[in-house]
Length: 90
Image (cartoon, rainbow, N blue to C red; front, side):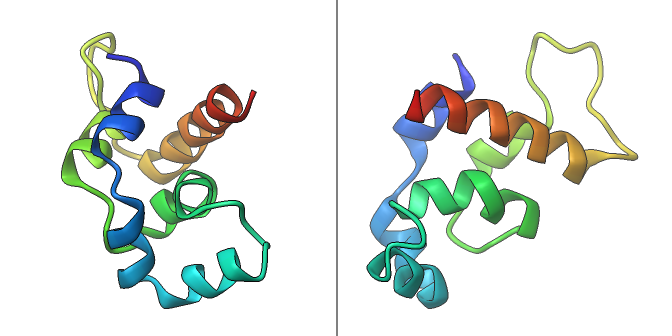
């Protein structure tokens, strides 16, 4: 399953915004279009609450890779998040 599909299937916008009131405020102020945008661009790297474990697991390791990244896990997640955001936004 693609990274974008995992996000669309497992991400719960309402839960993410409820657990991250600062993000909710940023969405209301139009700094972000959605909690999903924040999650992909910042939330994963910041390890924000409300991100399903399935998404974290998929971002750190997918079956197409021979082994999970260890040393640069956050940088690796940020790179993948950037690719997902481009896929979802277009």
